[in-house]
Structures are given as C-alpha cells and as structure tokens.
Image (cartoon, rainbow, N blue to C red; front, top):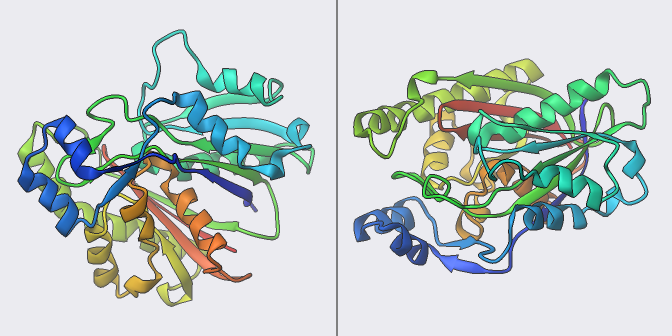
Length: 310
C-alpha cells in the first residue's frame, strides 16, 4: 500500500501583501477587496530572487530522511501545474538530480491535472514502486513552481499564487500515512481562458463545489469510510470561501479543515496538500491511525481527493 514516508516543506521568507501583487497585475480595488474580505487571502510567500531549482532544492534540503538513502530512490517526479516552466533546453529537474546524488533515478514531470497534479504524482509513484522488486525502493515527489507569468500568478475571481514547495518520500508499503484511496473527476468543458471568458468562469464557479464534493465522496467510498471517520480535511489553498461552502454542503466541521495556510502562505500550485499535511503533523493535529482526506482542484478542470491513514 502506497505510503508517504516523509514530507518536508520550504516556504520562502519573503512575505508580500496581496495588494502589492494585485497592483503589479493590474487588479482593481474591488477585486482585491473580494480576495481579502470574502476569500480570506492576506499575504503570499514569494522568492523574487530565486529560480525554480532553488525552490525545489530548498524543499529537498529540508528532507533529512533522504540522507543516506539516495541509492534507494528509483523515481523523481515533479508535480507541476503549469505545462511549461522553463525554456528549452533548460531542465532544472535533471540539474537537481546531479546536485543531490540522484543521477541514477528515472526523473520526469507530470502535469495536465493543474493544481490537482500533486495527488496524481503520489498515486503514480506508488504504482511504479509496486512493480519494483527491491522493497527498499523509494520515489521522491517534488512540488512547487514560480509565479513567472500572469497566468501563474492569479486565478480570476478565485485566488493568487504563492511559491511554497514540498518534497515527499514515497514507498510501496509502510506503516504511516498509507494511501487508502484516490479518486479523480475531470470536466474538460471547463478547459479555456477563464480570464477572458466570463460565461465559462461563471459556470466553473457555479459547478465547482458540486464536482469537488463528488470527488470527495468517491474517495471516501473507495476507502470504505464516511465523513465522520475523518480527523481532518487538507484542502488546496486557493481560498477560504470555497472550502467553507464545501464543508457546509457536506456537513463537515469547518474547524477540521486546515485553512491557516490560505491566509499566511497562499496557493502554492500542486504543493498545497503536502504543505498542509506538514502543518497538521508539526502541530500535532493528527494521531496515529487517524484518517484524513487531501483534496485539490485544478483549472481545466480536474478535481481529486485522496484518503490517507496517518
């Protein structure tokens, strides 16, 4: 059974109020009021001087469980929301392998699930490791991206992106943080330019909660669990308002939804689930045997949920 052996997080020290980013992007005062008052955004963690290898490398540096186990890494997977991150022929992922003694591993990027791709990467890592004959084999999943274009900085009327990063060691089997289920719901009719198509944006916002709930319920059904069995729900950090709506719709206590990082960190692409898991474990919000659900949505549109046992 796929297990998350260890999770590390890097949050840039530089914090920026959303108004500073909004001014640079040309957001109106009304849009900024919406983000702050309704969506619950406050500040973003950004590294204006760092590049993508710096961001991912800092997450790897924060993962001491990797030390001495480099030869056990079979796969390195970058869970990337944006289809393109650097111009050809640059390849920061392969540069990172050499830096950390992982040149022997098979490395690649998974994308096209947008901000839900982190869960896809964990599931894929487990599937690949299940075929490995060596029980010590591990995969390293990396998540984190730079806000290098306007599309990589804001989702219209919904959220503003940050530059947090995470690194996760995955094994084919383990005693803690075992993946019990993984469900995906895709709605390709929402693949388009939301910033330029107001009708598409309105339909996406209207149907978003229902499809997210559908993915959550599918993951719970696969795991043979009910909402009452969950100790926590770890969301993606797009905003607080959407998760309050979803929690109210499914009757889940909002106090069990880890929303603190929406305000203090921002939406870090596909890294949110791992960032929130790190927050939950470091704050002692999970006890051994607790079940929790990680949920994420990516424009395009993909809705994913994963149930895990701590």
